[in-house]
Image 1 (spheres, one colour):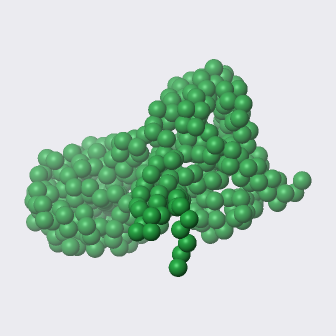
Image 2 (spheres, rainbow, N blue to C red):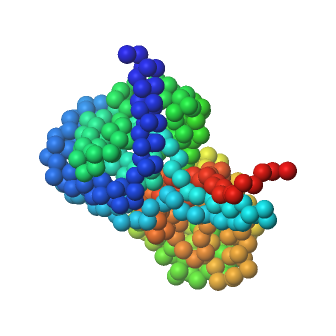
Image 3 (tube, rainbow, N blue to C red):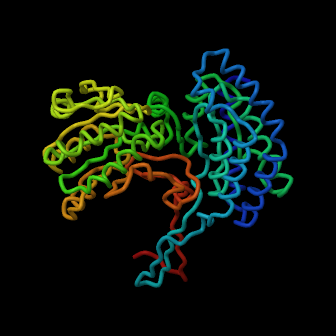
Length: 430
């Protein structure tokens, strides 16, 4: 079978499965999810054996220690996957919700009803726990899913998906066996073939680095929900509470710097900068954060003005730095003249992910919230809250920086579309 035929078969099977999934009740879906969770825990040795093969492959092919850590599955992480499945089962079913209802003058009753999207392709790297997370969210929302993980995780992904399907079929005889499928080949051309099948595939969601997402978006003929990168900002206004601002900045940068909602650029109002920046730099230096600064910030932090400990690392920021997602202990710092310049900087250099203002001035805060064009905008809070769990949505499948369709954390509701239902008693249009 050629690659084209193989991908066509995979997509065709998924389309058929999606129609069967739409018939399942919320109770049936939840029972399947709980069975899947139990199966992952009961078969953790098999998952770990498959993961050992992937770890060996990854080490032999030069994966970094950080990537190997993301690839690794142990009993604790497998238990975490099972816990996530149970959490998804506990969430309200997102399908069948009445989103709008109206009665026309001619007596025609209209309802806008939430429905599954259909077939969703998920493309991701390294972390095999995404296999369980993505499959469970798609299944709960009534969608068939085709999973394309990295070649380094192929063994783990196959075993996880296989256990989930087997458990669901044992629990429910009507569970469609092709509701959760893993692309069986690491051939990169498989993605291009799969994403050309617009008659079967409804949506693609890539999760990973910017280069992966751009490559997928450029080759896909089906809609793609994108999250290019997280260049997030915190702006400390002249009327900010300094202690509050310090805590927000520290949390946004160093609590977990390798995630997409971590701050990459700190903007400080010129009026507060002389008092605020030295203390802030001192605290950041204690966490070994390298600062890439503009001229004004460098002047305030230079040795002739301030004596900081020897761990302070300063570099001059380049134009490229302002648009870079470091995912590391590196932070850009710029001094700005008020909220207007802060907004302009964010809208020019930011990635429309998450941005925050720290201020006691309500009118400035409201301007910032209204004019910063990002998926999530905060007042006196850390950017680290942009997360499905923190939003009270339960699990998430990713964070979208698109404007059309889903935006921000994508939970169950964001994995649905809708249709209009009309109920009449013989009405005809004149």
